[in-house]
Length: 132
Image 1 (cartoon, rainbow, N blue to C red):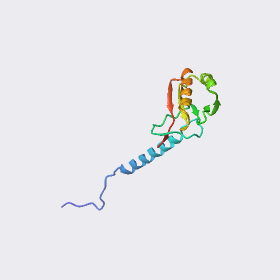
Image 2: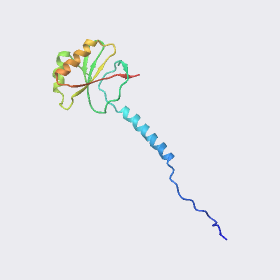
Image 3: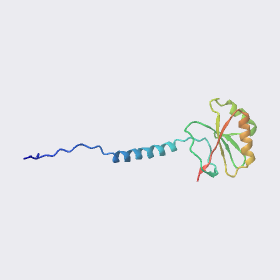
Image 4: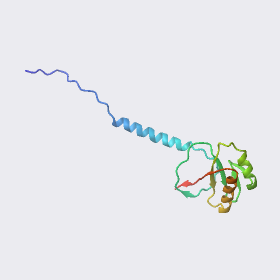
């Protein structure tokens, strides 16, 4: 005859579902926090609507073109003739520029700013848009 123990022993288990929930919560928290860390040196202008990926969080040169045609380099007003000299004075490790143009800015003003930046040795441009 087989005798049963008074206490039955259970094997321990690792519950993985609560761990997955915690990992998804941490992932969502870090994604939202990283979006708020993006630094853009543009002023408050109405950007055109569009879909774009987020840029890396690094210090970029920002050329802002306002609807009245005024051009700003990292929030500092600059004339179109002085833009090339101002860009050449910046450190050489900055080779990419964010163009933040008001949605009502004239196309010619934006192109003129980009061509001036290109003549200053800038080769990579990004266009800032508002996500729809």
